Length: 167
Length: 286
Figure 1 (spheres, chains in turn red, brown):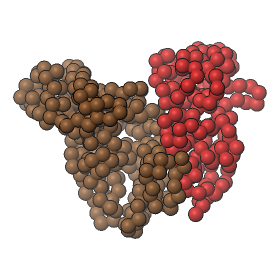
Figure 2 (cartoon, each protein chain N blue to C red; figure 1 turned 135 degrees about the vertical axis):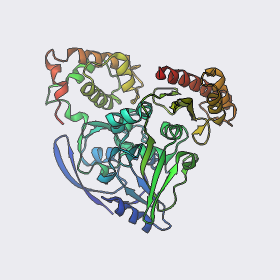
Figure 3 (cartoon, rainbow over the protein chains, first blue to last red; figure 1 turned 120 degrees about the vertical axis):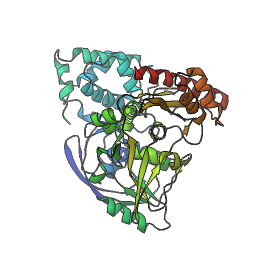
Figure 4 (cartoon, helix red, strand yellow; figure 1 turned 90 degrees about the horizontal axis):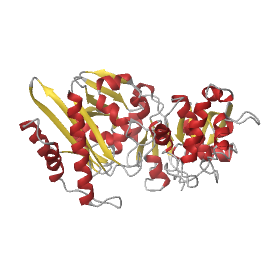
């Protein structure tokens, strides 16, 4: 039996009916065509399905879509404004913090929350926070450098937006 | 994989949830809180519940408060909320510290304190914290309410003394007197993985008498355990050598191994965790 839900995703309200067992990751990908939300392990280990619910990172493969009823969900699609990349995305580009790109959306969402919680993290704090997400290409070092770079630029130009991402 | 089909219920009051549990009869009905353990089990098709009762929308279970000498945490409180709570830090600093070792932030943003206790994973931190602090859980059914001490709650891996029709509505951690020394030390292969082994030490002054010491171990047996012989050593001599206390703590336990570590390795890791936790707890007393 399908259940009606109302979810705001990247600022737009969606009224849908879902089967209770539908995972949030499948709802975002299949109903809303948000292809940034990747499916990896499907049991809450790899972190590539990470999205933000009411501003906090969650794993969308171990959350039912109907648990997001009434919530605001943000995916990596919301980071850039048109052609203007988010400062974190710029930093990932600048520091080559991705290779195959599969982990990147989840990494970006985790790092965005980190920089909101803690605008000037130490490398160790970045290391600890991104340990929730697996990357098989970069060895993580470039990702840590990118987050540190984005944090350093905070308050010095476009990166000042980091704390003001709309959600 | 994808989770199997189930019937979904969304109560908005505790009484409504209890009525649904009472009506469940013989069907496999589970409580859905944060879902951070249940949904992976469903994705693996290990758990195949007929019905889920989602308690995330019961506002009256979302509270953290001081109540009769205890820190009371309602069943809808998320791990990250408790971790950031000034009340938890003040009333039960050991719980505050221990929560930082529970999984990763995205899991703590969904998972709940009570859910972790009810799930009763032998490698989880919260059962060991509740056990070390002599806490209890409050179980409610449509027929009434009872309190169960941590020592009587955890029975086997993933098995507790929750009876059919009962919901764990609250966890109760006795309030710290502010002068206690405590620590949780665990070893994980990667940050926030399931612990290979861990130890919790809580030292409490008692009316000027020798300090009462509680030592709990996790990750090495079917449930979290208290280390009675080691606690007795500390009761006899509060300055007992930390290494000898740790030896005693692991000496009395039949330790289970798995692919992440055999019994002898786990014994050594657990011993080291207890020793370090005791040293840190003593440091906190000064």
